[in-house]
Amino acid sequence: MKDVWGYRETSGRVGGEDLTGYTVEAVDGSIGAVDEHSDEVGSSYLVIDTGPWIFGKEVLLPAGTVIQIDPGERKIHVDRTKEQIRNAPEFDREKHLGAIEFHGRIGGYYEGPHRL
Image 1: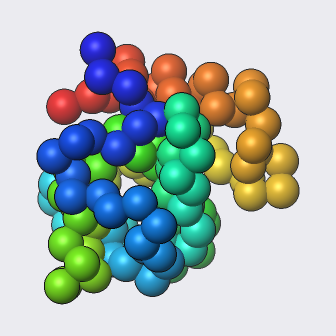
Image 2 (image 1 turned 45 degrees about the vertical axis):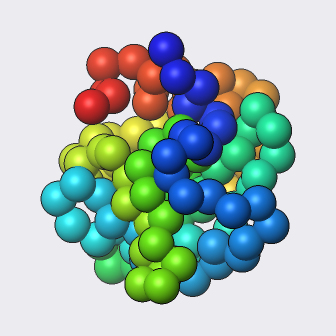
Image 3 (image 1 turned 135 degrees about the vertical axis):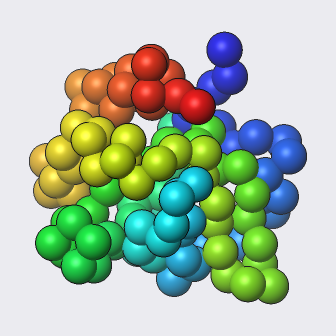
């Protein structure tokens, strides 16, 4: 099983590159833009501002969901559907960012049956 909290070697991730503002594309369409990201080893993630798609909510995607980063287009492609992302455990930046318990829940969700 791949590490859901690390970027795939084939993603095109260049360390230190600022991904803030990149559009994020699920396999079936756009889900929003990167508001924040982390490259911390073993805990890399993207926080996506979904805008009107999920009524202005944010979602947290582990870096292992990223299949391709296109710096020219400023797009990040992930290997999940919009429905899978919408059904992920609800993310609240104030409560969940950096919380080990939430990290485990979201990691379990994306490592489990919600993988493609």
